[in-house]
Length: 463
Image 1 (cartoon, rainbow, N blue to C red):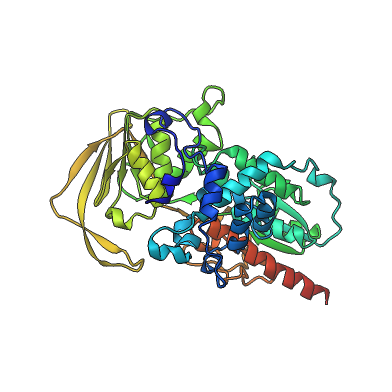
Image 2: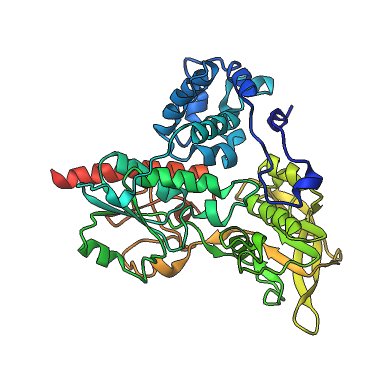
């Protein structure tokens, strides 16, 4: 049985009419029953599978004993974003995949248990009302650039180590992809805001609308006394296919489409003055979580038909199985083994059709997935009036172009080792700006690793 059957969800026919959270989470009774299944292994492989290094058996045992505050404290020793991770972390490929009970096909639902604990704490614990600007930390000044999951994780760990941390965020809200990318029905923004406030309460100063590379440069920050820097700006430059017609009206990058809906609240138009034009027939190119988010948002924004257009088969889809299943339940139509070759417009330069080729799968490529091979003569058209390109993002060069000494890879990403060290001794980096588009939990793990080596670097300077 798929673990999602453990929890109640909104009915698909009802939820496509709203942006409320789809999954309701575990009841207390369910959480205790699920925690009671844990074998409390002497060598817990699940911990090895967790990038946030959570002591999973300890917090699960605390749930079993109804010691929910203790469970929350255990999680937050290493993860300052538990309510986020409990919702969007792909546990099925990490901690749950490593669970010994996986051999019987039913691992502990670690993600749902983490969410249960985090939600319990939000409801039962008083959040600190301390303004981070009122906390006078006397420690060494450290700058974190980007308030996404990597930056928030790094900042929290550094603050707990006694450093005076300032996060510089270019947007008008903290959270990065958690705020602008992931829809409300998967990750309510009140959850993100709560976790960000908890990190600010550690003494982290978060400066919004602050574009490092424009508002100030890294050299400006050095002159102000900052002694180390973590770059966690994510991958915010959208990729396109490079096919004819991508400049037509009605073609979006998933980045723009989701930012308008999530960060700028287009789903609440006209309460929020952010229009987004969604036609009746929408094609989303790609099959990752971002593509599923875009397709499901388009449906909720009024589209009558929404297509996922993907060049490989379902077996190669990078999206979480749960997200694919939710999309199918909601009526998203999947055009698989299909490759767009041209977008056609009408006399007003608005999208009218998309020409595609059918594929077959060939030999595996560098990713390990079977390469799609076009079938000659298989062209066909799909009638659409909106096309959303969700095939990934690259590194935004705005900041990086101002740090001439920083070594970049061939795709413009920062070159850093597994601990976040770059070729510039006081600059560290992690998350999508290093790896390219990846998971939230991978970014959190990268932020944690970088915080450790930054601490070592700064202590070494004082010797």
